[in-house]
Image 1 (tube, rainbow, N blue to C red):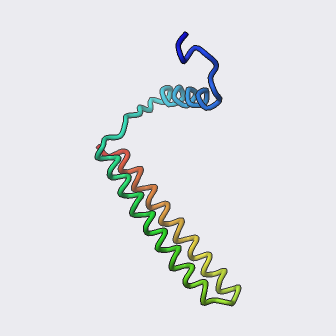
Image 2: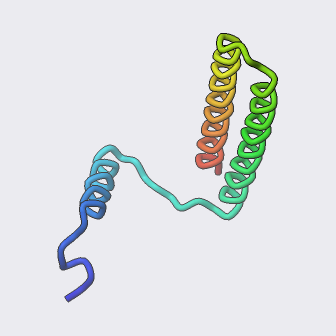
Image 3: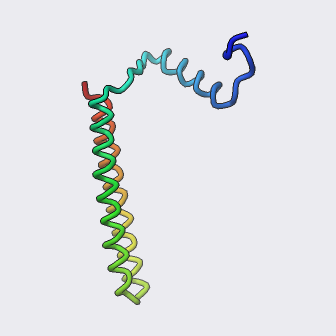
Length: 100
């Protein structure tokens, strides 16, 4: 009896459905090359550092503020900038995945 003949987990069943759905839609998955993996790792590392820097600067600015309204404005600006960086990172990672 092979490994695939027994009961399957919900995860395995879901992955089979996704693979079938992709196959029906004509989507083909190719493994990433080593260059693509290295590029993606570099992108993630760069943005992880940028987000950490943003966090440190944000915490430093918060320490000097007592006004709740100013803190709220600073928090909102921090959230927007963090989301912008995350979106930029995700777009670059996706571009690196599709690069030949």
